[in-house]
Image: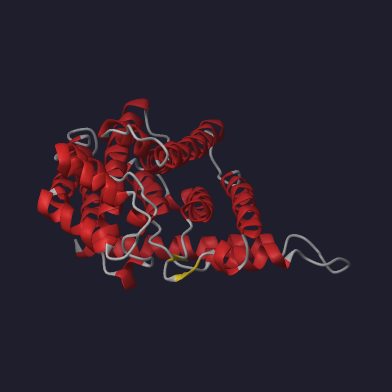
Amino acid sequence: MDNFKELISDYTKKINRSLSNFLESQANSVNYSDNKSPDSLFVPLNYIMSGGGKRIRPLLLLLSCDACGGNVDLALDAAVAIEILHNFTLVHDDIMDNALTRRGKETIHTRWSVNTAILVGDELIGLSYRSILNTKTNKISQIIKTFTDGVIEVCEGQALDNQFEKDDKISLNDYFFMIQKKTAELLSSAAVIGALIANASDKIIDVIRSYSKNLGLAFQIQDDLFDVIANESQFGKKIGGDIIEKKKTYLFLKSLEKSSGDNKENIIKMYFSEKNENKIENIIKIYKQLGVIEDAKNDINLYTRKAGDSLSNKLDYDAISKLLCFADLLLNRGY
């Protein structure tokens, strides 16, 4: 595990260096000497991109490439692209969620304006394509298709998430369909792109896709869980934000599934009440009483195990070990 942590540290440094170099090259690619540069775009863009992050998606891309026998240095442009794309989703998600903070800093729409945040998100999509097109591979058309499918799926997933807020009849099955699109598909796109750069066979790509999709489901349930149990300073945003926004998370839907009659009606009434005094604490208390926090932990373990089971006897021992360590790293993250 120590060797794996060193590998992750090395890959993270590669990603951060490549990301910084790419953004700097883009800033220097246009001569604005005779005209004013659009600082209203570039300043907030650099603000969000310099905000850190766990680099989970680009790390998965590099690990997938490595696991399939590829050269990770040839996958760095794609890794940068997937990280930039991820930040696009964060900028626009924050607008829709009315989020005040991200990674412990003010969100772009809060610090500047909604219009600025929309433009930054749009620019990030363009930059992500510019970066991935730099990838040196004979499978660029497949990579671009996978990347584009990921963009479409994450947008559709976010639309469903937004739509669910207004729909009274959402089930856990609906939730899983939504997070498959919103979260799992982008992780899957990253992993598959890494495998494509490594020239993996179709059979191996299917293995990588199954692994990453199950990992994505576990990751999103865990994110829902962190909204109520994480350390706020580490989490980088306010605890209970999903409750205040009345999001139909795993925890909320599971609590409805496990209750009935007046108890169920009381949960619904409290959750959708506009009165916020002690609301977060009261909802979390209900979650604990119904055992849905433990249910979430169990399902996180379940989908993480499914991710690991996807790899059995399909890759060599070293590759499987690295991907299992990555799953374990996500499962045991603190925020």
